[in-house]
Structures are given as structure tokens and as C-alpha cells.
Image (tube, rainbow, N blue to C red; front, side):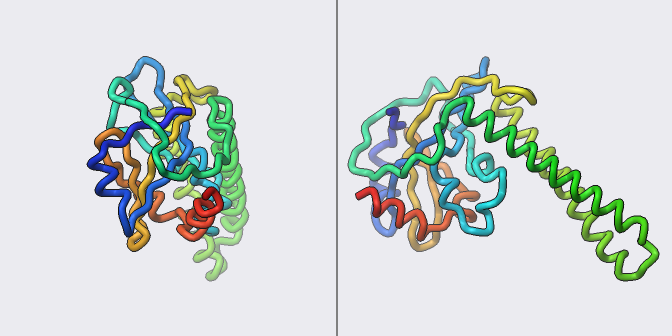
Length: 215
């Protein structure tokens, strides 16, 4: 398996108490005809807080772009750090299926919300219905905005609406988490990438339990 190298200075800064480091499996996605790299989550999505666990786009939200281009990537060894259990195959087919399912679920939510809006629109003269109508309308346009943002991100990954036009390689990334303030970092070569979505969504207790079971 491929372990992306993390420099000694990063290890000295981000892998000491109160921080811990561990390996997480990702799919390293390189859109064709580019030198860009994106890391698509294959392990941490199973450790999100309960309020996010039923969201179809969790893996996409937990994915991120590398500040290091393809030609700058180097590999190293596992060192002493634990590895999170794999939760996805982390192949090109796996990512394409995840993307399709996410879009399908989002389209279903948009359709259901639109139907609900049309239903209350017929009763819009009833005072309390006006409030409900406004809430549903806001939810509907919020979903449309979410899909627009999602499709823009997916196009950057190389997804053309049917397939992923990219090279995909299962790769381990070294993560650092501060147990006091929950800050997440991905340590890649000489860069520490701040991961705000991970800080917001990952349940630290589930993460620690998973890591302890690997010892």
C-alpha cells in the first residue's frame, strides 16, 4: 500500500501531545490532463457525528484538494502510526457509485420538496400556511444551491455527469487531530492541510475507539 510521506518537521509539530496521528485510506484522484490531486475519503466517513451519518454526500464533503501537485508526491513507510479500518473499496468504480448515489439522493430530496411546495401553494391564503410555504421554499432553493456547489466540485474531480475522467489510486494519508480543540490536519510532504469539515463532522470518541481497537 502507498503511504504519502510527511516531513519530519510536520511529525514533530503535529504528532505530539495533545495531538495524535494516524493513517486514513483515501482515493488519490488525478483528473486526466491535469497535475491536480484530490483525496476522496474512504475511511473517516464512517466516524461522523450521528447528525451527519445519514447524509449521502458525507464522503464528498470530507474530500479535499492537495496543495502538492502530482509530480511533487512522494511515498514513505507506515512508521509507528495506526491505520484506520478501511470502510470502502476506494476504487474508481466505488467513487463513481458514491457520486451517482449522492446525486440521486439529492435529486430525490429536491423533487420531494418541490412537490411539498406545490401542495401548500394551493392553500397559500391560509395564514399559517404562508409560514410553512416560506420554509419549504427556502429549503427547496437551499437544495438547488447545494446541488450547484456539489456539481462544481465534482467537475473539478473530473466527473462529467456519467463517469469519472481521472486516474484513481488507493493511498494512505497521515492525519493529525488535536484532542483538545478537535483541529484536523492532513500531513502531506511539507504541508499541513487544515480540514474544517473533519473538525465539524468527525466524532472524536468513535475515532479514538477505532484506533484503540487496532492496537
